[in-house]
Amino acid sequence: MSSITFDTLKYIDRLTESGIPEPQAKAQAVALGEVLQSQELATKADLRAEITLLKSEIIKWVVGISFAQLALILTILPQLIA
Image (tube, rainbow, N blue to C red; front, side):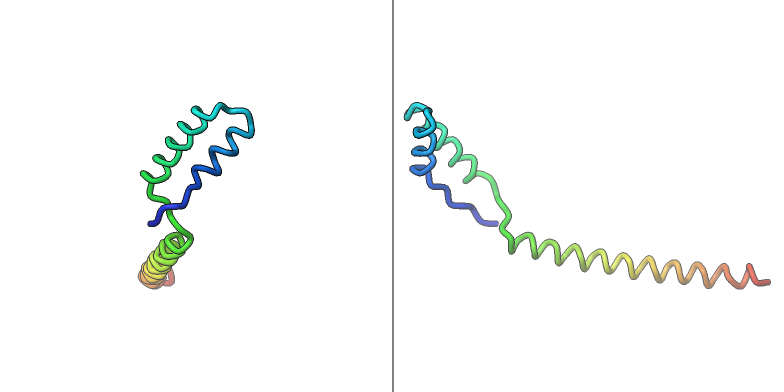
């Protein structure tokens, strides 16, 4: 997992332009920067890898259950015919 880039100066400018005092804008920028750095955020590549892994697991389960159903049907069918 990788971190995202966060432009604190641009964020502070946006906050001050919207009427928030500069000290408060700086404090918010620092706090948000710390939160973003402390979290592990998934990239698109990370998500694609996980989706591929889950798809293969689902296919394994579906094939296994299909064989189990076939075995059950083949076991019960002769008893129903007789």
